Image (cartoon, rainbow, N blue to C red; front, top):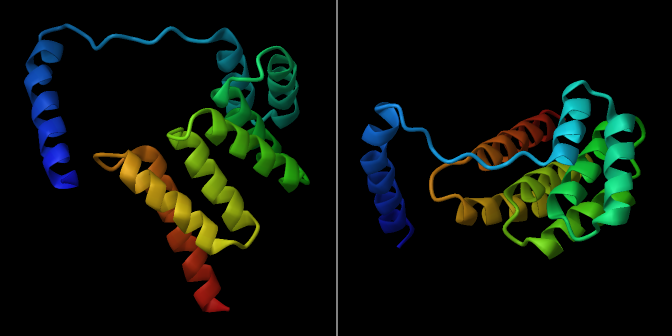
Length: 155
């Protein structure tokens, strides 16, 4: 069934390609200014600024899965991450949006940081189901799992 869906998706994309090649571009999503500021801080590896931006916005908008996901990521990437809080925010992102591919990827990476390979693989399996074609989130987590397993095998 998944193979059929992948074929249908590929055919739909192929049918749309000539219109895009002729100069039409796919519709763009409006950029959330808070998300943009937080991403800029993250891109600059200013984990504290990203955390501050997202903490403030989460106080006003607690039902935003993207904010929870990025907040957890900014904490996880910073010095001495409070993993209990990191897991809490990733799980909240998934409670709000069970199909949030970024949260599944990052939560899987957090489980690897904590030495829980099996939980990371659970999120990889979920991503495999969410991504009709290989997606960035699946590919990134898959590489992290393979690297983790290779390091563990060397010990």
